[in-house]
Image (cartoon, rainbow, N blue to C red; front, side, top):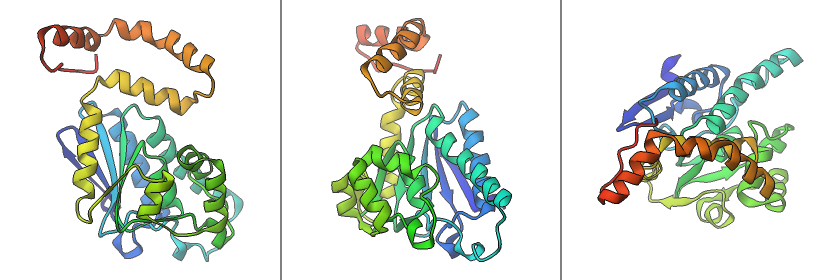
Length: 258
């Protein structure tokens, strides 16, 4: 079962690959459980500074496992699946480490949700995004009703969610679904470059910034209150003092997350 999600470490960046090519990496219950466990392990791993999330064999994720949808799913069974799926989304959005999505081929249904939950999204020119939930009589899940409007605005999000229209890579870039396009075969290297750019900065600062947006900054007073709670503590960190010293000595700082 562990082979459903592959993890490779490269210089402090974990490449997490959904690995169920026969179904275009559909999110079966087993895959979701393994993914949740792997992400939570990486969340606690001090050697991991960032995550690149991708899919095997030219596709990111085709969404829910339709082959399992014909079976009867009593309410408790359906709710238990959502509990597992929500572990994944909460870890992606709340962990104190940047998550960069690397999308080739389809990001459909819950695969679109996973992509939208990433902090930064790199997509191949072959990428296609579609919220296919309404075609199978379901609501968008894994947080897509929240994360997609954050990227494209409410009006566009409602249009995409209600229509289930396929959005190709260049339109996805125009709408703001994706943040950067890359040539086919170069998505992982482009995502790694972004991850390394993000991890060049102080880990505690990045973690607190991500936590602020996960909690919600909706007003100026929210931002000022969060600064008041956290900025003075950051003044006291070794990383802040190291950055000041490095600036004076005209060298690159060496951050340790302390």
